Amino acid sequence: MDVDLPPSYALTSSTSAAPLYSERPSTTERVLQTERHPTGLAPAAQGLKHLYKSDHLEVRLHPPHWGLTLPAYGLGATVDGLITFRKSCSHVTELSVSLQGVINTSASQHATVAVPGVSRNVFLKKKVVLFAAPQGQSATMKGEFPFALQFPHYVDGGCDPLPPSYTVYQPGITTEIFYTFRVDITRKGLRRHEKLATPILYLPKSRPSLPPVEDMPWARTDSWADARMRTVDVSPTWPTRPGRSDASAQQREDIPTITFTMPSTRCFASGEMIPVSMKIHCPRSPALAKLLSHNAHLSLVKRQKTWISLGAQISIRESLLSRADLYLADESQEGTAYLRLEVQAGEAGRECSWRVKDCVAVEHVIRLVILPPDHLKDFPTFKHEVPVTLTTDQYGSLQNEMLALGGVPFPALGLNDVHRYLRAQR
Image 1 (cartoon, rainbow, N blue to C red):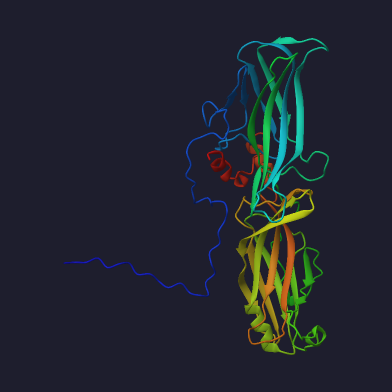
Image 2 (tube, rainbow, N blue to C red):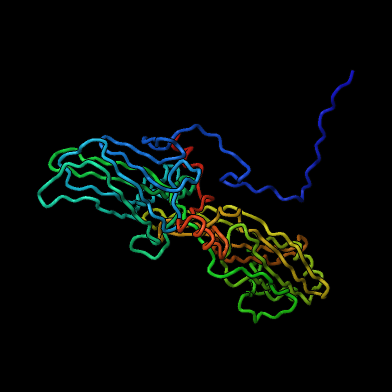
């Protein structure tokens, strides 16, 4: 009788890097969820029209269909649509529409960095009055009222660009940035005022102001007159050990000099490859340069910050986006190693650096760590961090997108957070 043998499994090498995990699914992954709208106002003709109803009103938003559950808008886009009175509404003194952007930060009782509670920061409040009755009078409203509100580019009263709809998860702390479109009917006297509010997504695209560097100079030329490049010295960090003198350790003759070179713009589109050059020079110990080149680790780190306790403390969460690949090295000169590395700026269209002052920020840094060989004692570790700015799209792509939809800005769909819908179903 034939017996099927079990499948064979290959052992994983101990030197292989652990896979990277992301808090959001990639384009090849799916999130299973039931069909439910996150608000109590379910739109008619789901996916085709954003139609919302209340007692007296019917509000139809007119954004292009992007395949998302909520209406989505790009950089500086206009929220437009039509308000229709389903039945006559008497004693109306004002009809208005408004956009509101809010940052909600909640700290649980298990958070050790903040007092438990919820803080609310309104960073955008824009209102347009569609109808206003004369002073002391009111009117009976019926018919249709078109409206249009444009997203500003900056936070109210500040110089920070308007942040995207976003959620930041940290141990014990959750920060959510959300936008709401609202219609208000103000009525005279003690009559019930009516409002209709629905969440919308603001997903602004961003692009570098300068084109990317196509031909990075080879480090061995030692010529850094190119204004497109910036070179810095990497400083050593000495281990703290009792009874050791820092002064004597720093006088060691085998301490190398390490330089780090990358494009001076420090602004890259997400998904691009960021080129980096390094030079390790150690003439007193030629073999050490080669050993250190194998111990060099370069990575791109995403840093999410939340200001809590009325701005007195900062909660920080870091996640690894990518590691660099060494694709060219030159050790032909004794005592000197030249390295070329590339690190990917996250997944295309999904990363963006932004901040709201003293409230929340998403930052990106390139981190270099060069560990000493195991056999060397009292030898420093070399560490260096370079803050970089990531954008959702590549340089020069704005004109083609604007032409495609006749001037309507595309939203950055990669910034959409699927957890937003899963939370609404709990």
